[in-house]
Length: 403
Image (cartoon, rainbow, N blue to C red; front, side):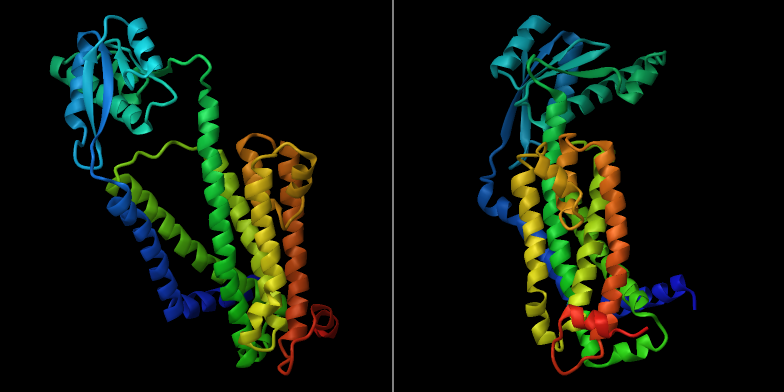
């Protein structure tokens, strides 16, 4: 049997056995209820049902029509918003009104429209105005039959430009703030995924050791193959669970709460996802090794306590220290340490504090560490899985392993 086939069979076994178990279904239901409660509770206690009023200034006759379309399409229901329009004499007066806070935004121009905003302008208002302007332009083009060279910029959205009236405002800083929030959410999700799926791996290995299923499996598989298949299978189940919950949360926020989510750089999301997966692999492998040296499920959590401390420490370092000190020498060092890199690198990537060579070096070190860890954990697994009487130390399990 080839290595890939062996790992694939173990992975498929984990997907079927654990994916169809009651505990997996109950944990999925619990997370769904938790997310649903997080959305519903603010609606009962945090929202008094009032309607937010956004004030928009218009400059020019065509901007009035675009503003009227935005006002007519505003939800206006309890907990949502409505738009009030006011006319302004010229673009300078409108910009001054936006900067002073007397209006929330302004529409200036006819063909090529400028949406004047400030740093306090709600994103949902900016998005609503942009959509209304583009819809108005398309409707006008269809009604007049004037399909000219302006059709391309209108359809592509280039006919609308957002201008911030505050000179000191930095759009890149706003995008960085949004990505910082995403990085913090990613750290929380990684911590939850490691603690949840890590416990699945831990208890799964300990239960198979107790009922001696592992003896049957190891008669045909090498220990590290069994370990790798189990980690990948449980990881896919965890990714499916957390991914579906995250997708449901995004849909609920967008449709139920009618909140337009801001754009986030695709490269940053890719970096976050990569280190999310690598972080899971490191910690799940450690939990599997710990499960092999515990002699019964009741003692598994106690045996895994040091690893839990490392997990919590990595999370606290990333969210408390590195987020506020991304450029220090210690942050650079922690980026290259495999057990802390998953919690550190996404936070540093937000502020462009991590260089390309640091990312590449951290990635290479992480891959090498994972390969070595799986090999070592497989040997510890082989030495500890046949010990049924008492818990043994990891060093003893490693030395007593036979291949």
